[in-house]
Length: 119
Image (tube, rainbow, N blue to C red; front, side):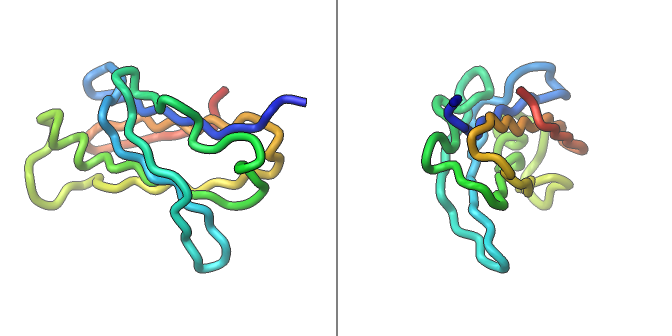
């Protein structure tokens, strides 16, 4: 049986390239509890160097990825200091079958974002 894993990547749709240097935090959600279980930064390809979770660490349940898009947008010159339209972007999702591969990408620009279950 294949080992389950959770992966992500970030693409900057305004600039048409991977978003390098985006800090990402992963939380396990249980009721009103958010417990941070992983943190990483995207590499030059907009991807993480390793899965956010894999194997026995990936269990059935609710999770939330939080992308620090505002820091990236400021660093890339697409946003000024002060209040941003998009800053931290949370994406909450469920893992019903931990033996599967779940890929949760983020496509960002200063004023919009989208996500989907990728492969």
